[in-house]
Image (tube, rainbow, N blue to C red):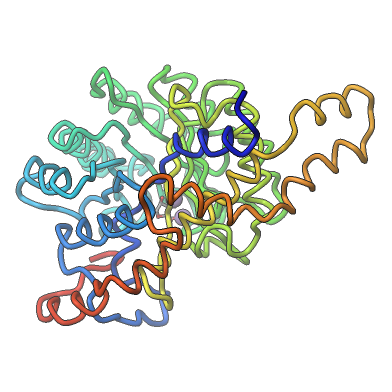
Length: 389
Ligand code: PSV
Ligand code: MN
Ligand code: MN
C-alpha cells in the first residue's frame, strides 16, 4: 500500500503548470515600465526562458502565446523550436483590446464592421492553433460600457453569442474554447462577460468544447473562488485557471503571494473533485506580469507556490473530513483542512524533485546556472518584448 507521502508525490507528478509568454517580457503599470537586462526581444527568446523554467521545475512543458504580441511568420517553425527545447505551445490568447477600432468594444461593438474584424482575429487565432498544435483558444474581452444608456446590454449579449458561435464552429476536433470572465476594467459600468455565470451560460449553449476559465484576479474582493471552482468542476465546465495574486484589483502578482490560503482552498476543491486527473483536462495556467521582480525566478517561484498549495490540498484527510461532515462536527471538519494547510510540504517537494532527477531547490539551481548573466550579455540591441509589444 502506498503511504500518504507517496500518494501525494504520485499525484503531484501528474500536474503541469503552463507559463505565459508575456510573463517573461517587460511589463509595468500605466505609470512606468521598468526595463530589465536580458529580457527577451522575440517570441523565440521567450521560449528559451520558458525552457529554463521547465529545466529547473520539471513541470512547465507548455507556454501560452498572445497574439499579436507573439506574432511570427512561421508558427510551425515556432512550435518546432519549442519542441527542440522540450516545450509545447499551449493556449493561444486573443487580443481584441488594443486597436483604435475597439473603443466601443470588439465582438459586442454596435458596428458590424468592427465585429467582423474582431471575429476575423479570433478565427486567425484558430488558424494559428492548427499550425502550433495548440488545443486551447483563450478568449478575454475588454468589451463593456462606461455609462448607463451607452448601449443596449441585451443586444451586446446577442452579438457576443453570435461571435462565439462562429468561432466555436471553426474549432477542430481536439480544440476547445476557454471563455474568461472579469468583473471590472477597462469598462466601468457594465462588462459583457463579468462573471462565471455569464461565461458558463454562453459555454453551455455553445457545447462541450466551450469551457470557463477562472482568472483568480478577476473577482470582487471576498468572492469565494473555491465555490466557483467546485461548481464548474461538477458541471464539467472548468477549462482552466489563469493563476495570479491580487491585493486590490487585477494585480497579476505571483500566485500564492498575497493569499496562499485561498490558493490552498481552491486546490482543495480541485483535488477533492477530480480536477487534477489528466482526464479532467483542467489547464493550470499562470497569467502574471512581473513589473519589479526578476522574471524567470518569479515564474519559478509561482510554479513552486502552485505545487505547495497542491501538495497541501492532497494531504487533506478526505475520509476524516467526510466523517466529520456527516456527523456535523464543524470543528473536526475545519481541522481536517487546517492540519493539511499547516503542514510544511517543502521537504516533500524537495524529495519529489530529487526523485525526478531535478535540483531540490529550483531557484538556487537557476541562480547558479549562469543563464541570467548570459542573457544580460547576449540580448542587447533590438526591441525588448513586453506587454503590448
Ligand atoms: C486582462 O485582464 C488580462 O489580464 C486577462 O486576464 C487576460 O487573460 C490577459 O489580460 C491576457 O490577455
Ligand atoms: Mn487572465
Ligand atoms: Mn487579468
